[in-house]
Length: 144
Image (tube, rainbow, N blue to C red; front, side, top):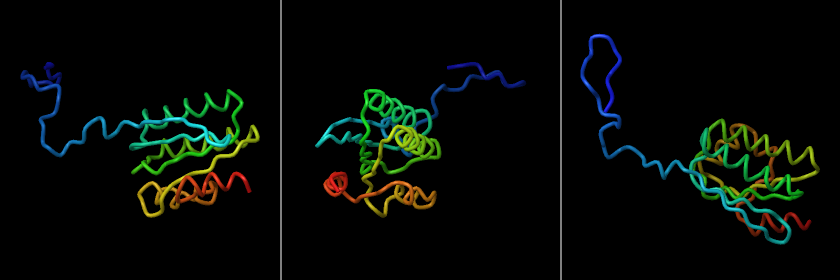
């Protein structure tokens, strides 16, 4: 509980909003990023809503760590990303620029029709990134 600082209000209010059953859990907002390497391609598996302060920060760190280690071929698997905000879009573009500046490449796995795919289309990122519907097709594209 905390004291409400508004003039004329001397009551206290709960620090947490009341449970309504509609509120999403913090876990639904948390992004998880797992790294793997297949056939020399670094795969970042992203899962969860990519939003400011969580998704963008985690993506930046995971990507920079690999780039600084000398890696240059990347696949961002966004199959489990239901939504990304402008901060996540901006960080995805920043990763692309960092990779390109160092002779690297980023490709994306993203099933068509979802909200994340819609964001990529609306922001023309589908013209910047090669987007594939599944991991196998994306990995095969690195060989050609």
